[in-house]
Length: 121
Image 1 (tube, rainbow, N blue to C red):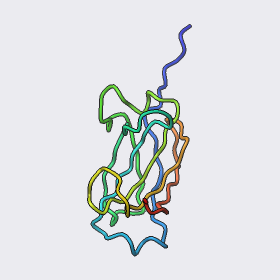
Image 2: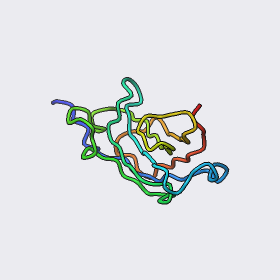
Image 3: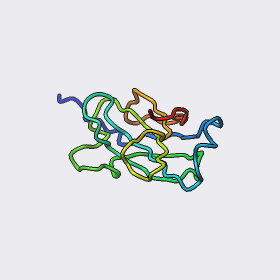
Image 4: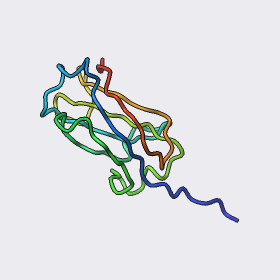
């Protein structure tokens, strides 16, 4: 018999901001929550965009948020989930942005906890 395909098409959890970094973030700064392959290309598989004012926030990333129909989070064995506060509002990480991540994560994982607790250098 053929191996079963990965049927887990989402990950979910909560993102919060470390109180020590609160003064470095404005309520209107953009928060990106991204799923990427834990290994290989850094192209996001799913992206959610929010504002700092929404934190802490419960999130779900799933295959419907794929940037490309050929690259879905259900198509990889392990993920890296990144949360980043962008001062510029740009999707590209820049020095001064605030970030946190968790890895490795298997598709289907729930109850993830990501704390934005670092400054991008």
